[in-house]
Length: 154
Image 1 (spheres, helix red, strand yellow):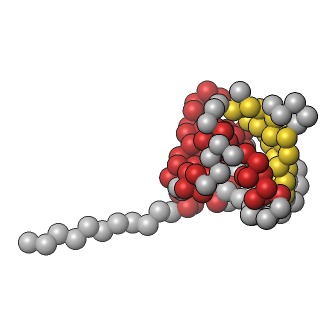
Image 2: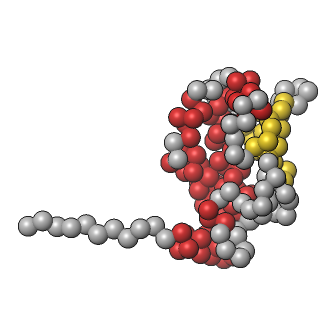
Image 3: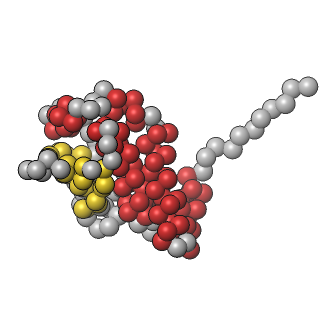
């Protein structure tokens, strides 16, 4: 006897509502844990390692691909601080958040504060082969016209 597996497609509204519930009803440490993991999974589940592998260990080539070849939908430019301990990521001006989970009236600010931060920590740590710490300096969801960060190289 053949069995048929019926699968219900992912419902974006359901996920957005769940994330909003977490944002509004959970303590800060719980929100940080859940949304940070969401950013981690975004990096690895979307196979971003395949993209970064071509630049792994070569920050200058990565920066050139963004700055000279304009290979990013999201970033306008990357630059190094004078002491080369920080990467300044300047986002392009936007009219909305890049994350599909930000859909709705009041998207969770934890998408910026933890999810995006974690995503970029994974990306730049993977690229550089060492830990980094990310500081969100501008964010559309936090009221800015672009999403920019500072990557502190550990």
